[in-house]
Each structure stands twice: as C-alpha cells, then as structure tokens.
Amino acid sequence: LFSVCCSLLFRTLQMAIAGTLYGDPNGFRAKKIITAAEFANKKIKVETLDKMKRNWAHPPSELLFVTNEGNQLFDCNSIACYLANPFHGSGGGDHFHDSEVLQWINIADLKILAPILSWVIPCLSAGSYNSVNVTEAKAESLDAMGWLNEQLLSKTFLVGERISVVDIILACNVLPAYQHVVSNSLFKEKHMIVFDERVRKLYANVTRWFMTIINQPFFKKAIGDVPLCDKPAVFDPKEFEEFVKKSLTDERIAPKDNKDGAKVQSKAKAKQAEAPKKEVEVDVEEKVAESDKKDPFAAFPKGKFDMDGFKRVYSNEDTETKAIPYFWSHFDPDNYSIWFCEYKYPKELEKVFMSCNLITGMFQRLDKLRKNAFASVCLFGEDNNSTISGIWIWRGHQLAFELSEDWQIDYESYSWSKLDPKDEKTKSLVNEYLKWEGKFDGKKFNQGKIFK
Image (cartoon, rainbow, N blue to C red; front, top):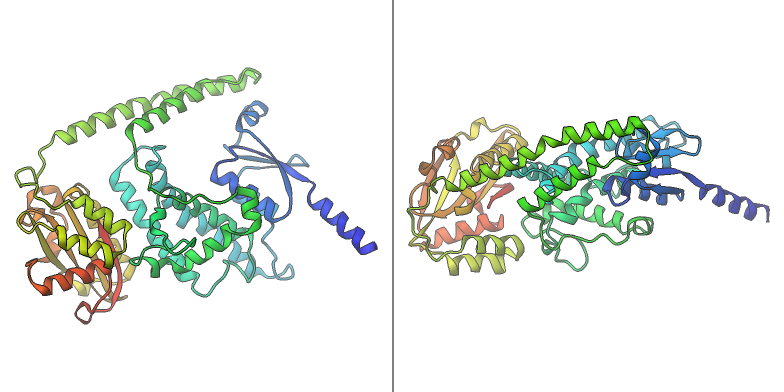
C-alpha cells in the first residue's frame, strides 16, 4: 500500500504544472517544447504570443517559458532540455554521454535546421524567393540528410539505446521539410516514408528513425498525426506580398493595455518594417525586367517533347517502369539533343563532399537553363579517387552553354559529346544515369544529382 501511495504521489508531482509557455503553439519550435513536456510526463500551460507582449514590454524572443519559480528561458532547445533532462543518462557521471547530447543539439540546429528553413520558408511564400539560394539550401539539406543517414546506420536513437529529447528536437527540425517540400508522392511503401528508388538507399536509415519518433504515443498526443506533404509548396509572389502586408499591419497594432514603453517599441518596429515594402516592389519589377530579356532558346522550335511533363513523371513516378518509357516514347530527336559530359580533371578531385559541391555549384549557376534542360550528373569512386560524368538533355542541337555568357563559367571544365538517340548504346547509357544503377563502364557509383 505504501509503495502504491508513493507511486501515485510521484505521478501527481510529475503532472503538476511545470511552467508557462508563451508563443505560437502551432510553430515547430513550440511543438518541440510541447512534445518534450509530454515525453517527460510534465504539464505546461500554453499562452498566446499576444499575452506575452502584454506582460513584457520587451520580450526576449518570440518564445518564452516561465517556470513556477519565475525563472525565464527563451531558447526552445533549452526549454525542451529543462522539461526532459537528457543529461547524466548513465548514473549522473557519464561526461561522454553529456557531450554527445550537446553535440546532437548543436548539429540539429546548425547542420540540419538552418538549410531546411532556408529551403522551406521561401517555398511557403513566407520569405523572399531567390532560386539560387533555395536550390543551394535544398542541396545542403539533402547532403545533411545523407550524412545523418550514415550516422543512423547502426543507431536506433541518437544518444544511447532509448529515445530522448534529442530525438524529439531533431525530428521537429526535419518536420517542416516532410510537411511542406518533400512530396508525399515519393512515399510509396504502405504508410512508411520512403523516398523513391533514386534516393531510398541514401535516406533509408533516416526514414526508419523519423517514423519511429513521430509514431510514438507521446508525440501523437502532443502534436497529433503528422500530415505529410502531398504536393511540394511553391513560392507565390502574391501570397508573399500579402504575407508582408499582414506582417506590417500586425507590427503597427500596439496592445491597448500595455505600458508606454511597449507602445513606443511597437511604433519603432512598425517604422523599421516599412522598408521591406520597397523590396517587394523591386523584386516584382526585376522579375518583369528579367522576363523581357531575350530567351536564348527563342530562335529554336519548341518541338513536341514536353520537358516539364517528363520532369514531373521522373520526380513522382517509378523511374524504370514509368519515367524511362515516358522519356523514350515522347523524346523529340528533331528538336532536342542528348549529351554526355565528363569532368576533365579527375586527379584534382579530393573529398567526396567537395566533388558534390562542384556539381551543385554548377547547377546553381545554370539556374536559368532549367526551363529547357534536364541532367543527371553522377560521382563515381571515393575520396581522392573519383570521377564525375553525366547526361544532359536540352532543346536544340547546339551546345547550350554557348547561347549565354552566364552559362559559360563551368562547362569548359568538362568534355562534351553529342549522343545519337537511335543508338542502343545511348539508350543504355541514358537509362543507367536516370536510374543511378547499372554497369557505368565499370565505375563504382557513389551518388548523383539531378538538374531539373
């Protein structure tokens, strides 16, 4: 009886309100904290951001946690750790364990979250869109996921043999990508999140770990079922303009029951927020000006090949059974051409990640070519012993890079040969580069990147 009473008392103390969280409960940072509290079996009170601004003339951030003792924390990871202490997991004296916890918390934000937000926010029209920056952020995000996949090869959880708040922090960091830009059409194996065949091998371990975390009872109780992205979010200039207008309006509204200092602060913020209005107008004008520039492909016949249609099939359907047959049945050899490229200086290639950055950098600088071109460029080999080669498809029969000075930075570092689409060797080569599988003339495939 005594032990039962102690157990009930312990549970009651655990579920006592641990503090108050001020902020947007729908934000992914707040979700980290709410989930951590649920995981630790602790109850917290959640108040709106407006109430925080009424109580604090100068709130430290858009997120604030106040303990029952009146102490304040305003970093989401710190709050999550306060609620579900991940430290001293091995009897209170394992310094390596504690260091590992700190390591993963830092990696979760710096290596994983930063590029994901740079990718997702513009796609949601909640930030200005620069195609080069977004493409770079996407590449960095996928590179980080590839690195994480290697780390999870022999791990069920990030630290130790049990789930911890560190898993919650990282899972919430990758959540925006799964919800908004990583298409659900790529997740085709029952209810499990798995990427299509071209990247499944790269992210299988992340997939297994992520699904394990978001399907935990405490996670579902805190957040509910996680809705996965059916269609990737795409930047909309009109939505962005409305977002900016709403932000400016919200900044100008000062709480009526606040102190004079808070009113002055709100007015100052409103004045500072006036500046972005011009930026929106300039961006729109620049886009119009860019569209008026002469298209390098304007003189070429449009042909019958629907490049966008092929890209959609390649992105969303099975490569071998859908995308490849679609390509060969729709390809227009009279108005489009296929090219093979190979990097001229393989002896200069060192680390694999540096070679990947070489490919990504070229893709970024060719951003305006995307509308009329597609490519699969692959890295073969390993550190200090690798090669780069790929296949390109574009409108016209001329070497596309010669059409614009903006496209001539990288292409001379590669050898180029035009392929005969009627030749069976060409078909076999193209199929291998589209699938990222095959003989590749004896070269060992490492990874590939798609330009589309």
